[in-house]
Length: 92
Image (cartoon, rainbow, N blue to C red; front, side):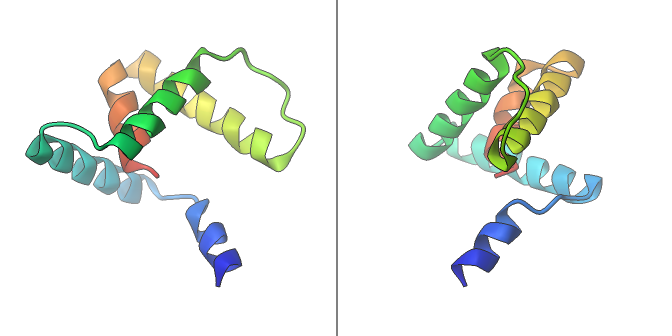
C-alpha cells in the first residue's frame, strides 16, 4: 500500500488537472486568509529550490527536484512570484 501511495504522489498531471488543483488552492488560501504552517514550509522549500544553481541530477530524486526547479522558474519568469506560492501549495 505504501509503495503505491508514493507512486501516485509523483504521477504527472494533465494541464486541466494542474489548473484545477491550482484554482482550488487559490480558493482555499483566500477563504483561510493565508497558508498553514506545513504549506508555508513547502513554499519556503520551493523558493529555496528556485535560488539554487542548476546541478546535473545524479539520482531520480535529483532529477525530480531539477524538473521542479525548472517548472518553478518558468512560473516565476512567466507570471508572478505569487503563482509560485500557489503552485507549491496546490500541486503537492
